[in-house]
Length: 214
Image (cartoon, rainbow, N blue to C red; front, side, top):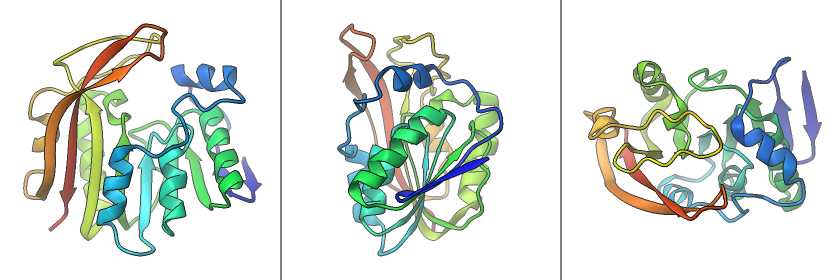
């Protein structure tokens, strides 16, 4: 089944998969829990991507980065397993007059066809089981045009904090960098980000990578 809106197209499954954040999106119909301003990673990736690029945003949630990238003139597909998050993304796109295509799917499933100029994810690939991640990265690399870019932020096991009863498959040291062996690494770093989505101030350890296919 599917639904159309002025902001784009929403393709859904007959039985959308469960998401721990889906409940949060339902409980906040008038508020975007991640905000509507794009992430720093999305802004950095957009600066690297040429005009009218084809972009895929993995685990796009409420669409703050998806809509921002569409506003830059790109053709953007946002993928998330929460239909409630995607519906909020569509509302944000309509509000801003942007066109996005949203697909409800659970990674590592990727019901899309390449090729893409930018593969982007901000805090989503660590929900994919480690046993499935190798195949996911291989598929993502195969969906990328020569000269195209990947930009990811993932949670690492250096600092573990569990919230919302979610299951996180934390990245091990060098796992993300190894996924891009043979690519041009434009930026790779580790750090800490603050969070309080469960009402308790805490931090997550993260790893960021921007890489370009030769």
